[in-house]
Image (cartoon, rainbow, N blue to C red; front, side):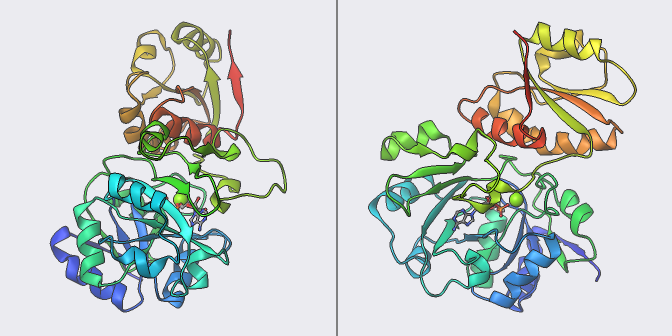
Length: 337
Ligand code: TXA
Ligand code: MG
């Protein structure tokens, strides 16, 4: 199959493909998604095939008008409504009890559905033109870093999907925040562009799922199936180092050698004696989020085999950066006092 790169003015072509049950790579403000008609189970099943995604990992349904929530969920609770009013359109996904229109392929057998109203104008226009909600996971091959440019999607999925709409580089750079309001006290399942602090400012104290910061025990029950899979891994072996800039750079320099590199912050650059990629300043979590996935892909292009990553601070959007980096490092953190 030939994979065409479409421009935003070709939205109608993309919308027709979606209506015909085909897959389209689409930009959102978080990462690129691999979209299909969310109400067409057969089309949705093809997403799993193209990505090599385990069938038990449910998908997010993207909408472009709030009214659509009513037919997709059986309970649009007060808390869910407050969150939607404050953060949509934007990088927040809300898990709610599903209605009967949701195909099993979307919810992977769960009785809930994850819904998000993206703020990217191209995503919004595509959903409206297709006249159906669009189910979309990140448009990467399962396991590799999520795509933040049309070119990343092309690299992973060329020949497997008919089209990708190029909407430029994604602004946020990390996937949406996922929160469940389907079972008692709302719980953060995945941190993202909307922060824990911002959510608690709107609906009060919430829980943070154990899987956000920690490795789940073998066989543990997971609230969000995506948590249990290996994620965001470049080919290089990533080691996460929690330390001051001085201790970090000394440590990395002392391990200097063939194929050794650093994923660092601006403050570390001057003292480093190995090839590096910087994510931005140590306190600039927004830039770190924006740059992370492209950086993970670039480490491989640089031919590195061992990468020392400077551990981000888990506050604000930094929590989302931390959540992704510990996964790319297989949850191993070395602390230097
Ligand atoms: O920003 C994003 O969220 C991007 C763009 C394309 O919207 N999408 C994305 O999708 O990251 P994906 O499939 O890569 O991640 C969705 C996450 C997975 O961890 C999945 O397990 C979880 O959301 N999820 C989906 N439906 C769920 C449900 N009903 N209950 C709990 N977790 C759910
Ligand atoms: Mg993903």
